[in-house]
Image 1 (tube, rainbow, N blue to C red):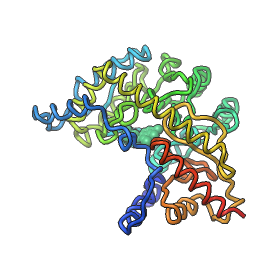
Image 2 (cartoon, helix red, strand yellow):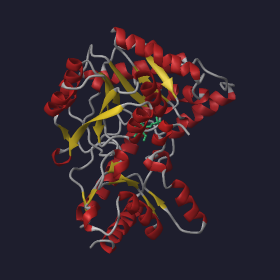
Image 3 (cartoon, rainbow, N blue to C red):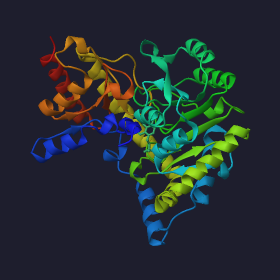
Length: 400
Ligand code: PLP
């Protein structure tokens, strides 16, 4: 295997095969590791119907590499409607999930010795994809005690001394913390990126999943004229992870943005097409704003209720500390004081929790934050309560 392939993998799924083996041997497993809303909220029927219609009308061939025109148009209009973003359908590249876009972007921008700013805790693929391409991260740490604010001044100081910083990437709303950045913080990040000539990548795949009073601001609203890429897709806000459809909008007209658009399309040509019937179904999902709004509102109200319920249980727990209430996405990211346990590290914790209690979660180190665990807050309350109480009991048993 190549040396770089050592960075391949994903902490979220690393125990899947082992968990499946346990399940086959008769153990019941509660899976709180994967952020798949479809496991708890079926994809809305009008989207499934649109998918079936596409299949029945033989929309089963390769599509244009960067996506079918109807979808690129629908995405461009969606961002104009929601975020007042001026973009053309030609600024949109459709990919097989945002995952593929992350891999394309790292391959096209990063050479060995290049650097990228990653807001930490991060989505695991940001790190692995950067490292696979030989890049090194510069971390911008969210401050845990202050609703996950960012120390922009120290990041600015860091960037003054760094060369070859190609981009910065952040997820807003955040996976794994569930925090949602305020407009002011976004503007500071945009200004800083502009001052240092760093391309902005804003992963907004959870854009419609905010609650607890948060309002979502798109990076595109505060960065007019600043080079950037915006990610979105079918997986989360549209509750269709298995469609495998994501997109990137690179809306500006500076030379770098134009080159990035072109290069990303070249990457799309290499894999010919993304899933064609899913593109037709997603185009319809976006265009049918009424059906979509009704579906997403219902799902988000449930997510808010379940996440708050789980947050309350964590607050009561003696073993897990959670510093601020999530306002978006569907995760909880509590801290565990590992040195007060007999567990080796968070990897050991995850493995033993699976064996002893049949609960699968994700280790914090997968997101760049040791001494944390990530719990998906999508299941019904009964399941969440059982799982969190078991995690607490498990930690009681392993405390010293
Ligand atoms: N970006 C973030 C922040 C995510 O949380 C996820 C999935 O959990 C992805 C991207 C991957 O999305 P997709 O299903 O579009 O590949």
